[in-house]
Length: 269
Image (cartoon, rainbow, N blue to C red):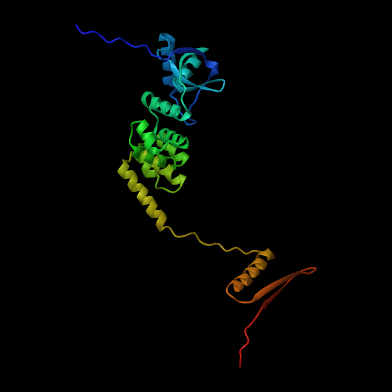
C-alpha cells in the first residue's frame, strides 16, 4: 500500500486586515463588468471569501497585489475586514503578479494589456523580461506598444463595436483621429473582414496622397511693420551673399525713414 507524502504547511499566514487600511492598486484604464462584480459579491455573501487576497506593505497601510475584484466585492457588501496574505515585493514584481492574475481571471482587452506593458517598461522591465515573466512571446509585447498610438475615439469605437486586434492594427496606418474613427465604425457596420478593412485603409491613404496640396492664400496686410521687416530681411540676405549693404531706420514725427546703402564695385579703367 502506497503512503501519501506528508503535506507541508504553508509558511504564509493569513491575516485579517481592516479594509480601511487597504489601498486598491489598479490601472487607470481598468474597467470592470459590474454584473460580474455583483455575482462575485453574491458568491462571497453566500459562501464566504474562499481565497484570501494578497497585499504588500506601503506606508501606514497596504496595497493590493492580487484580489482587486474581491476587495471591491467585499466593499460592496459593507465588510470591514478581509483575509489577506502579506507579501513584501517591490512595485515592479507586484505589477507583474497583478497583470498575471488579471489575465487569468478576467482577461484584459488589448488596449489595457498594452498600457500594462507600457507601465512595466517605465518601471525598468525590458520587453524580453516582461515576455519571460508572463510566459508570452516578446513580439506580443513589442507589437502592443504600437496600439497606444491609436487615437482615443478610435480605441473606443474598436472596443464598442467588438473589432479584433488585427482590425485595430490596420487602423494604425491612418494619420488622423477622424479617419480612424470613421473607418472603425464602417468596418463594424459593414462587418468587414481584416483584409477588407486593410483594403479600405489603403484606399483612404491613396486618396490622401493624390489630393492636391492646399492653396496658398496671400492676404493683403495693412500693417506697415510687416513690409519694413521684409525690407530688413532683404538687406540681411544681401549681406549673407557678400554684398556690402546696410539699413538705417529713423523715426520721424509722422513717419519712419529708412536709408538703405549698397556699396557698388567701381570698375578699373
